[in-house]
Structure formats: structure tokens, C-alpha cells
View 1 (cartoon, helix red, strand yellow):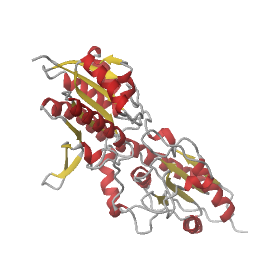
View 2 (cartoon, rainbow, N blue to C red):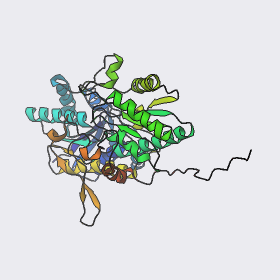
View 3 (tube, helix red, strand yellow):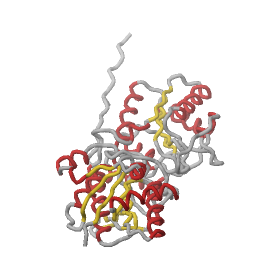
View 4 (cartoon, one colour):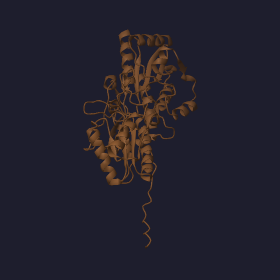
Amino acid sequence: MDPINILVAQGGGPTAVINQSLAGVVLEARRHAGIGAVYGARHGVKGIVRDDLLDLGHASAELLEQVAATPAAALGSTRDKPDAAYCAAIFAVLRARQIGQFFYIGGNDSSDTVRIVSEAAQAQGYPLSCIHIPKTIDNDLMGNDHTPGYPSAARFVAQAFAGADLDNAALPGVYVGVVMGRHAGFLTAAAAAARQHPDDGPHLVYLPERAFDTERFLAEVQATVQRLGRCVVAVSEGIHDADGQPILAQLGKALARDAHGNVQLSGTGALADLLCEQIKTRLGLSRVRGDTLGYLQRSFVGCVSDVDQREARAVGEQAVRYAMQGHAAGSVAVQRRADGRGGEGVHYPLIPLATVAARTRTMDDAFIAASGSDVTPAFLDYLLPLLGGPLPQTQRLRLPAVPPRAS
């Protein structure tokens, strides 16, 4: 039997550990005598139709390990969604290169691409194993406890807000930090891990799982300022009103969409500016600052969860094993389970593509405080084990004040 040639590609937004999955695929493939050439498509499915491939068989183990430790998609990425004509172009290359296994590292839209290619292969009678390898900083893949890429991004968000809170305490005012998350608030919620002392921020956390009311928001900011003399706010880019209209749309701008139909909410500081202007004009506060974390959340060098690194490598390895076992299609999932000794273990089942493809998981109600503007201890119990080693610790000068001089 001739060796099977395989093709791996990366899709969607990069992460700090996506290349761990790539290395996992390549290094695991080398352990199987039944695998021949290992190709990598540059810029996702776009690279396949262009026959723009790298021969990953020439990569040394040392190089692969160095790339694995490097953030962002080493092969390049895309958000293209294949239609019938696109699939025809894909299969022209797959046939020419005698590809028998296709691995796509990406989020829910990328899993939908894998589904489309898999169904096209079945319709054409082309023998192709199509395995989706999960990644997304949004943590919004169905069928997963958590997703590679999220723990490292969450660690960055927690550390960013810890620093912003110290800054805000030094020069009191209101700070608004906008975090990625169109429909799921997991990443914004991670800001709560920044708290180390009772009065630490973020003091308010707004998630897309709850309708955003501007009047209530202003009242909560004002109450926090009255109580603490300052306020730090973490807010998801995807917050919306009770009718589902993005708060960003209140700027009166048309919101663009990508090939998968997703509204483009990132790329500007517009939401932070809008909320800060409301605070300034409605509450009469002068020291109000806003930031949009933007791309910094995705591929920040030197802020990586070791748990995330291990699991991202594991899903790449498992994908190859499942394909070599004869599975025609599926998505590798990351699931936690009790180990019977009071701890948790992780396993990586292969689940149907339909479970994941183009579907979005949101935060559990048990993770969101009744106020709608904070998270619960249950969420922190869920999150903290994923962040890896201890977060940097901060301290305050909590010392007695010198008594005033006698007049």
C-alpha cells in the first residue's frame, strides 16, 4: 500500500499556541510509516487552491520546536469560506498531490470549512480523511470544555488588567478596556483573574451574554467611583442592547462582515471611545481613559500558558492518530473530567464536525453574576487551572499614615 500524503493548514485568527498544533501534526506524522509527504498550505485553503505549499518534511525537529514556541500562524491564515467552485479547485490540487488526509487548525468557521470539504469529498467519492484541530482565543467551540489558544489569551488579558488597575489606582479615574469576544464573553471574563486584593479591578465586567443597558452601566460606574474613588471596566466588543443591536452600531456606522457572515467589531477603538464619552458627558468625570486590546490578545510574545502549550500540541498529535485509525471526518475536542481522586484530567475525543461547525458556545449562566456585570467564583474555578503557572503578584503600600503636624 502506498504511503498517504497529508496536508495541514491554519485558518482564522492566530493564537499564541497554534504552532504547537502544527508541530504536533508534523512530528506525529513522522512516527507513522504509512505517511509519506507532509505538506503545509500557506494561508489556509487559499494556499491549497493556489498550490502554494511548503514541504514540511524538510523541517528539522529543532526548527519545528522553535516554531511551536512562536506565536501566530507560521503557515499564514485566511478567512475564506469555500463554495462549490472553490472546492473544485481544492480537489484539483489534492488529486495532483495525492493527498489522503487533510488537517485544518482553526475555530468554528474553520471547522465549517472542514465540513464543507469533507462533504465534497464524499460526494465525489474521493478518499479523504478530514480532521479539524481546534483553536480560538474566544473559547466558543461547542463540544469543548475549553479551546487551545484561549488560556494564553486569557492569561494576557488578566495581566493586562492587573497593570491597568495599578495605573488607575495611582492616578484615580475611570478606565475602560475593550476585549475581543463577539458572542462569547470568556476572554473578557478572564480580566477578573487580575484581582489580588479586595478593591482591585476590574470592578465591572460586561459580557455579550447579557443585554447592555447604557443607563445601568453609567449608574454602576458612578456607584463604583463613589465607593472607591475610581473604576476599572472590562467590556466585550460584542456587547449589544436588548434588541441584539451591537452597541458599536450606535455610532451610526455600517458594520462590515467577513466571508462567514461575522460582523467586524475589532480593528478600531470606537467602542471604548463611545463608552468613555458617555461617562465624561453624562457623569461629568474628567479623567476617563479607554483602550482596545485588539490583536495584542492573540499573539503576545512571552505571555503563554504552559497548559495551553501542552494541550495545543496534543490536539495536533491526536488528529493524526485519528486519521491513521481510519476516521473519515471529525473534530478533536478538549474535555476535562474528574480523575476519581479529586482532581481533573484532560482527554481528546473525536466529535462530529456538525457539533462544532459554524456553531457558537457562550458562557454558562453559572459563570455570570446575578448583577450581569461580574463573574462568579465558579468561573474563576474553571479558569485559573488553565492559566498555567502563577500570575505575577503585586503588592500595595498598606502602611500607617504619618500623623499631621501639630499647628
